Image (cartoon, rainbow, N blue to C red):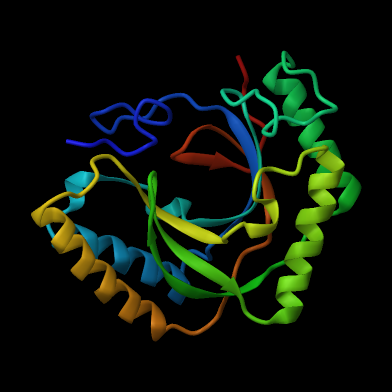
Length: 223
């Protein structure tokens, strides 16, 4: 049995959540939209395939696109932490820094995206997204660059970042017969995504989290 890369970091082996405090900038998928319906359908497809126990599903009301990642309390190392922020800063101070940086740039408005394809990586099963056109791509790229500059942190592969909506974290990597079922499932999910029209996200916001299952637009208590 091979566990996904988030086991031991973001989740326990049984799929229960671990503390993993941080912040990020996300744009929610509109709750009653066709894009939301598609994400729910993708989840149903995984469960119906018999592979549901291999995954830790995100709550359906938590589907979102990460616009740009922030920082995490448990990843205080070079390349993942702002140079202008002491590595022993409290998470409350870190939240202050991120909020101030984003306010200095100004928040991005709604973004028009489209589904690309499914991706099954070392840690998660996600639906990849693409900006609808070159104008949306420039808007996103400009915002991401300005925020990274203000925060004082260009994360590794900043320019290669793939927009996505996470469907589930991998608990147990599908192997053997399960891998065959996964390959078939991925093909069917991609067929579904290819039929979808473009959609618009909700307005992005700075989100605060204590674990990977709940993202709050309001500041949360920090220990």
